[in-house]
Length: 396
Ligand SMILES: *Cc1c(COP(=O)(O)O)cnc(C)c1O
Image (cartoon, rainbow, N blue to C red; front, side):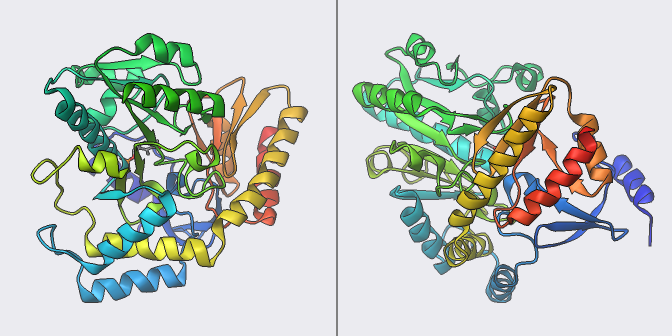
């Protein structure tokens, strides 16, 4: 067998160098642990970037996928398939939204949400110069449309021009949103809890004010729940804790727990007055294998009381991270909700993350000086203790 070093050399000569990867080749997973090809064990507080909510090697999940593979993997959207019908019904139930469109990724869900909002506005007045307000420090994906609403100039610059008529406001600053509203505003888009940008939750006040503004002006509220959704903050979707409902929303990451899926959903009002036959499509979206993954994920969320676990263990993690803020001067703040947490450092965190990896703990950053905690949603208090022990040994 080749060594890890050999594999990494091969990877670097064959793959386009778009990622600065850690020097590890992962091989398999079990529960909340991952193993590299040399058999070293890692406690995983990244979950494939907030994806693998159920933990690795879940028997029921694996069996459901295997059963679907033996039936049919793909059929195209020219035809109906039962797993997609079941998945759409379940998503409606957990999200309270009325219409579902399946995609293959988060970025593609954001693309669809933008198209739906533009079409809604177009049907109202027949013009094509509508504007969207997005937020600074947001992240919505790497495709051109999703990048256009991503509030990080560094990601956008080399790829200009972006899609037009995007304005950026400040998250949790309602006045800055108001200042950007015009007669042409068709949508206001943000992550209910900003992820990549540094774990900034929307405040209840901000969400409510934006919702009221949207209602008054018939502007669509689009919430990106790709990272913060699927139970991560202790409700199925983060907006549900505020009693404020979006007109359009996106979901991905943990929705398929590893099988690449995404979705955008909308209310009946938007569904009846936006995208229609011929307006939008995708070859793979909602194929039987992808839909089977969504079905078993949503079943397991219920059966295994995932959201209850997030609330219990999330509270414990919050308490433990707050202790670190008290204890270390160079840790300035903890932000987040449930099992989506950020620890803000005065200095870059790259070295701490690499050290933790050496000691068998997988952590990721959000920006240069924030450690992001987005573990599998099945972690226990004992796993939090285990994480804290390794993390503290790296801080000293
Ligand atoms: C990850 C992410 C995306 C992009 O999803 P991909 O599946 O990588 O395209 C969009 N929005 C948010 C909030 C994300 O965290």
